[in-house]
Amino acid sequence: MIVCDAIFADNYEYTSRWFGRRMNKPAWRSYYYARNLILAVRRSRNRPLYHAVAAYRLLRECALIVLAQDDKWQRLRLIGAGAVDAWRWREWQDLGAEVPEVKR
Image (cartoon, rainbow, N blue to C red):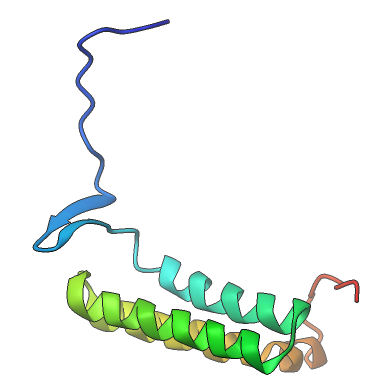
């Protein structure tokens, strides 16, 4: 079905800033962004270059949070918590936490 002259209101995830439009996802996504990025590097290509790229991406995300996001401290704290949890993933396995198998 085609609708002509439809008006679509922009949702809450996009906000206008002084430098353009920025996605404003919920703050809890920062935790999973950091955790999943580090876990992906550790599980797939555990090499220094990939760790450097992950560190660059995390620093870039922190800079964007400081410059343009709301809830700055909460987002930065969640990125730190996600990074710490990703590095402690082996400890979780030792405690008996259910972790999916990874093929190597």
